[in-house]
Image 1 (cartoon, helix red, strand yellow):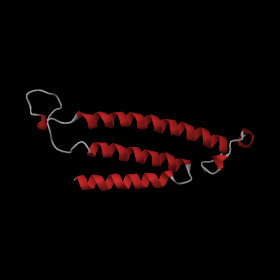
Image 2 (cartoon, rainbow, N blue to C red):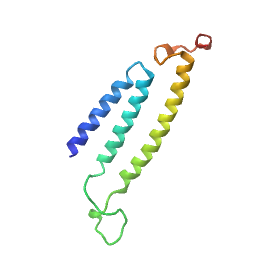
Image 3 (cartoon, helix red, strand yellow):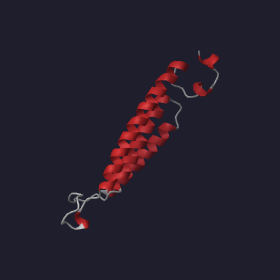
Image 4 (cartoon, one colour):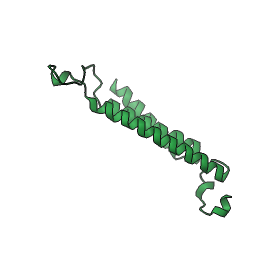
Length: 116
């Protein structure tokens, strides 16, 4: 099962990297989303995918308790990726309005007179 997760993570990272390197703003945003999904899945896979008990210390053995750290890291990563995605969507919308398209080659100028 871990091999399947490793292959999925590799495919997500490869597709995300490919899309980030394209010259379209929409593909850039989708590529960033794929990279965050791959990172979340990698953190999830590192949490030892076995059926375990609750992560609350009590009379159970430490080997039988679940590790709460990957769960907390994934939750934090989801919130951060939502914020980054919202920011890039707003930035991309504003940039496409200023330039008149989503081509990143057209966005390389810094003169305000050329953009208006």
